[in-house]
Each structure stands twice: as C-alpha cells, then as structure tokens.
Image: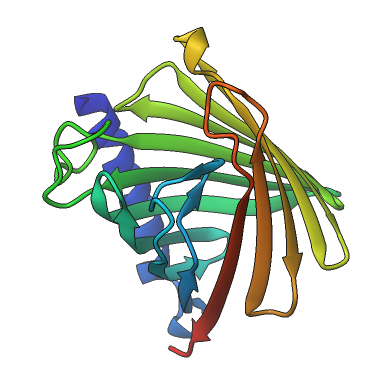
Length: 217
C-alpha cells in the first residue's frame, strides 16, 4: 500500500510540476457536467435504475493531465470521487494514453471498499491504445482488488460506437463479458444499450440516456 500511495503521489506531483512550470497560456482547463438515466459501469447498473449526476475538471499541458471526476454514486457505496493523472501522446498512427486512477467513496465502508474515504485504497493503472477507429484499453488494479484486470475493445464508425468488455480475475467464477452499442445524437446527447454475455450475471438489456455539457472555464 505504501508503494501504491507513493506511485500515485509521484504521478500527481509530476503532472502538477509540469503545469506550474508551463506558461499560463499553454495550460488548458476543461470541465463538464453530465446526467444519465443510470450509472452504467463495465456492464453493471450500479445505481439500481436510478439517475446519476457527474462532473469533472481536468488540467492539461503538453500531453500531461490531472483531474477530478465525481458522481452521485452507486446504490451500494454511495458518492464517488476519482482522482487521476496521466500522459497522452501519439506515435505515428498509434494514440497512447497512460494514467493512474484512484477511487474514493467518502464515508462508505460497504461493498468492495474497506475504507471509502482513504486515498490509495482502490487504484488502477490504465493503458489506452488506439489506431484509427479501433481502441484497446487495459485496466490493471494495483490496490484494493489485486488480481482483477478489465479489458475493452472498441470500434467507432460515424455516430456509433461498439465496445466489448471483459474481466480477468483470480477468481475465475467472477469473470464476465459485456457488449455495448452507443449512438451519439450530437455532442451532448447519447444513447447506450448494454448486454451482459454471462448468464451468471444480470443479463437484462440495459438502456442508458446521457446528457453532458461542457463548462467554460
């Protein structure tokens, strides 16, 4: 755990030092607010059918970025606050995005979170790779649920996006897969259908309507 906290602290510090050292005009600050008909997370409906409100703010410069994302939360763990820092770049036709995410559930001691308000208890390193319309993302849990990996393979065409997601757990009985189809009506309004592909999990077809707005900074 100490090594995980050091890694997270070093990532945030490195990104922060880069941003502070850069000219003010080179630093980009972006934010958004969103509402969704349910909290869809990796194929699961975490809000038990209830709407979810979320928002984020990100500071970026020269490929480095850091920010905070918050949500009204899920039905079990309540309010969620995520802290992240990373670096995104391109190598020829390949886009690369490497980041560290820390998940905090203030005041919660339920579900998979032992101490919801403790920084560093639940963290992932996320690697995203993309070539044209195809993307591959790897989520490696480094604290809180070691032995849990999540993968997605995505394909975008026009306003439609298709995503296949699946897990690799030490507990093989907990593995599952899901398939999502999304349609972006415009830059703000989107619709998603999500279907579990594992009979041991909730196999109901989930439908999500989400609306997001950028916030001028």
